[in-house]
Every structure is written in C-alpha cells, then in structure tokens.
Length: 260
Image 1: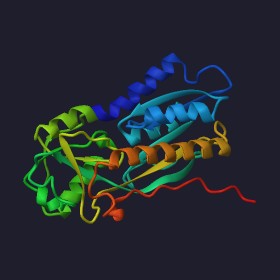
Image 2: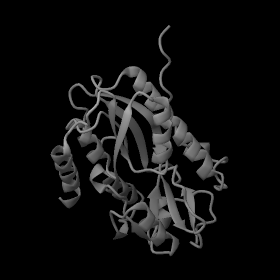
Image 3: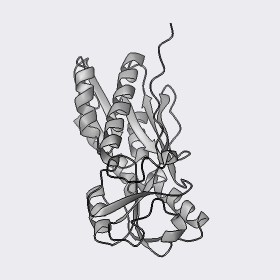
C-alpha cells in the first residue's frame, strides 16, 4: 500500500503545482530510473531544440505508466515484465523499443560462483537476496515465480532499496540481486547471465498523439536506443562472458523507416 501511495502523492504534488508547464513547446517525459537517463536528456535537448523538456523518474513502471494515464506527462519510457504493465489507456499509443531484455544476477566479487561463465538460478537457492525496487510493477512477483520454478523460495533480506544501497550490500556479501544489462557495476561485484534466461523484461514507449508527433516519437525512440547501446558497450567491456553468450544480449528495436 505504501509503495502504491508514492504515485498518488506524486500526482497530487503535480496537481498543486500546476499540471502542464506554461509554453507551447513544453514536453513532459516520464522514465524509469537508469544509468543513462542523464545522457538521454542531453541527447533529446539536442535533437528536439524546439521543446522545453521536463522529466519525472521513478523505480516503478506502474507509477510511470500512471503518470501518463493521468495526463501528468506526455510520453513515457518504461520497462517491466510482460503482463505486468497496465493496459494502454484510450488514445495512448505504444511501441516496443527493447524486447527481450534478459536480467542478470549480481554477486560479490569473492562469491563462490563469481568466476563462472553462466549460473543456474537453482545454484543460488541458499543465498540471501536483495529484492528488486519498484515491486509493485511485478518485478518481485516474477522473481519469486522464477525461483520457485527453479525449486526454491528466495530468502529476501532487503527489499525496495535504491540501486546504490543494494549495490553496497551485494559488494559486502550481504546477498545477491538482479540487474538490467545497462547496470554499470563496480569492481567489488560480478555480473553473470542466468542459464535459460528465466527472468525477461521489455521496454516500451507510450505517448499521447495530441501532445507528441510521430516524428518526435521517432527521435525519442532512436535516442533511447542509442544511449542504451552506448551504456551497454561501456558496461559490458569488463564482462568476460559477453561475446561468448549472444543469447543473453538484449534485442533493440529501431524506429520503423518512413514509408516511401
């Protein structure tokens, strides 16, 4: 209940301050917290010079999707497990930008399995786990289902932590956690793919066509793919298994070419 209340409080604060910023060129974006949100904003400011951009971020795809449903943003870039995002409201359009997006496991660098190329989820049955943030978007439920399919119930020691806090706990051996492919990591941890890709996500764009043109959506789409790709290249250079396991790579979808 407290997690879901975050979205309500955010909406009330926005309503008090004024729903839509003044100015014809205003463009309101909603997005999940990520390691590349800063690079994305720089890119969009360059590619959409006629727009005054504002951004709201959250750890939960459900909260971000609700911001669009309540007309508090014009376009959102969200990720979640399939079947766990709210349906598109009437009049809202959607397109896929990344699908599938396999999730990886993060272990302490001195973990007994940190030297492996891939790891079975069942091999971590006795480990403590740090629950994913934004559990109201289905990430915690999907994680539990994957663990139970592997034959165990996960032992959750911490839940709903921000990335920096969770990373510190993993690095000091307090538990394992899941991460997306653009997770930057640190020297004190090891990032490994899970055999069989038991936990898969995807990312989509949603927008209101009366507020954002198709050409602008194409720009946002391409910018997201580009900064995601750059973060991926930067963060996977230290992963020894990356080139040997293309099946664990996310699949990025470029905007469809304009008809001739």
